Image (cartoon, rainbow, N blue to C red; front, side, top):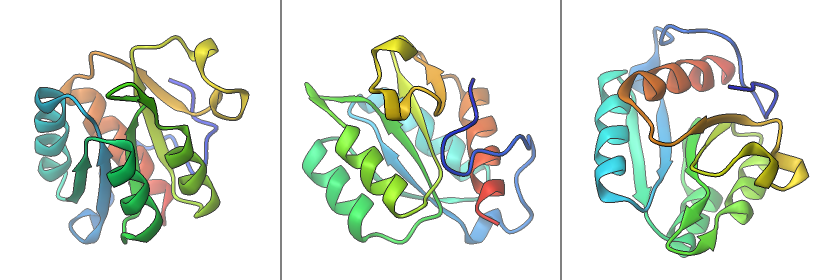
Length: 136
């Protein structure tokens, strides 16, 4: 996992105030979304979404209040790079979840915190810990 995208810190424990934190989940695969939601909630944070399509993801990324995001790249055939751009512009730390190789990402996102699918519960917990810690 690379950790040079906006706000990606190297902490592995949830911050003590994680219960007050909110995480945007952008994922179009229902089973993956369930796993991600469950693990975010187990960390003591609230889930915003999940957004399963680009339109919903863009709306939430632009308007919702949250401190971090987990972003699937391919949403039913639409690439979610515009969502990543909104998150970057808002200085919200995020991680990319994808089945794609890092080199397939646009140059602006090749150094982002990235987890290659399938995403396991432990991945989600580590990602949330890093992202939420970076929001302090």
